[in-house]
Length: 293
Image 1 (tube, rainbow, N blue to C red):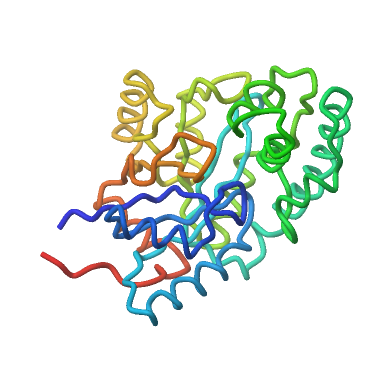
Image 2 (cartoon, helix red, strand yellow):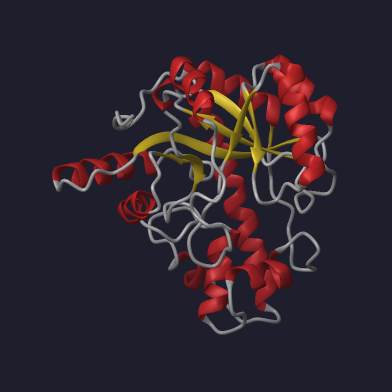
């Protein structure tokens, strides 16, 4: 049976707009059997997905199973690498230690960007953090605050105009070394996967094929091939590397909700790729896989 698996979605607990419960309901509506909850640079969303899943089960709503993880922003030199780390055991502490340092540095960076932008688009730090009460804000939340004040129509427009690396207001973000995150993820029992490799819009220097080879030797297990930012040429390159290096093939929508064009379930992961994640991961899948034939 071929399952419908979208292993790359984000909730309002990082830079998405859907609460976990709403996201699970939406996933069920579009026919997904499994969703990957991979909010950025955190594991704080896990408890909320557990709660939402249990609530929907109790109500007879039949939510999809949840592949818990995190999308972590890293780099190899100037090459940006987003890692999806699935099913680690955060209590082991290796990834949490890495992420805490990154969070502290990124908060300072975002405050500097708010100061820069406010010279031409008056906005305060209080207005930004009001977008995510109790959570760590990021550029998407700054974008939402700018939209709320009427400066831009959508979050995407805010990124295109003032929040991207080309902008005079931009402050480079601190990132952690990719190999450090791979090692920490493996130490926590997680399964590292390279997200949207070779995407043209990301970073100053595109990811290199030899870097993927090095990361595979370091323990990366899979590579995301089916993603809206990968055209035919980068997709074929990723597929070729997966075959060469023995990586499983993934794909996902990178759904964030309102403000981004990504449609939940628009790209999926082959069912055969779920098995190695479940076999290697230290944390079990949240929920049960369907038994239909």
